Length: 325
Image 1 (cartoon, rainbow, N blue to C red):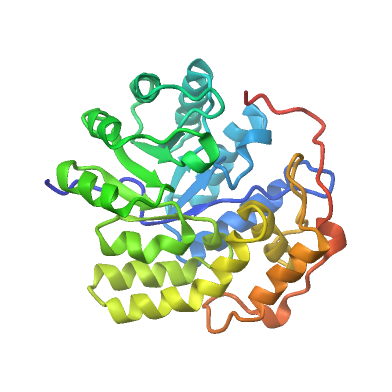
Image 2: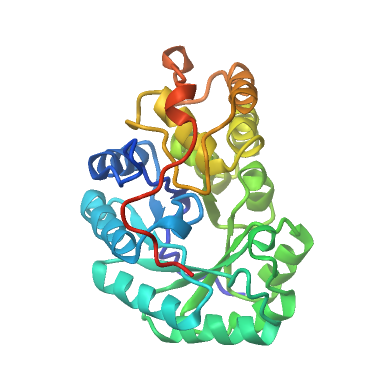
């Protein structure tokens, strides 16, 4: 298949949404964190995705996150809006509003909880993609949504002119290879531990949680793979392994990423919104044990790590409830 232009970037951060201790969005921290990620090597920012706690954000917060990210980026990185809805009509309205707010692309998650058939998925994705002129990434994450996008459905969706990519959190490498062989779709690794394996079989880039903490080594991996330098890419991958384990193993990635970012002094609070809660004592201890194994990761100075388990404890109820179904 012919190569096509990539409108999304290659090092995409699945951005956390920094909150204040009361659970309200800390907009100053959002701006600073986006700038930090871009300066560290990210060329794409995914706001309002799973890691951004889309399920507990209000629609106005989601649109403002696009606007703020677009302003902070200043053209340095593409701004992709994630999330969506398990109601097709609601998803369409969100993505239309995101396009007006300046988004460069949309990432459509498989409808969750409803457990639609493949025919339902096909209709949902097509209708959302029809509603916007923006390039689309399909988000295949059956562990969270309960339904995979099958190979046959992906092939049919690949024919839509706006659907250009898949974020794969399914981990079926043989299927990825098969789709890459038969379509022009780009693939983005949606599993931090599998970034280099995905790239090695032809993926375009990554949409990563750990990149909130360390975008620079992912930039190094991408640049090395682009240059055909497997040795450098492998070294960066291996140095990241304990950090990825700390972020992705013991608690939801959002929770661990905020805990670590706060301990590094990069966000003002590690607060998450209920039903997410901060790590319990034993979970925090496991995260900290993994971090003790992290060495030589560019942009991560753990000598300054000061975790605050009390600040992270529990979860917050925002003043205004979210509207995601």
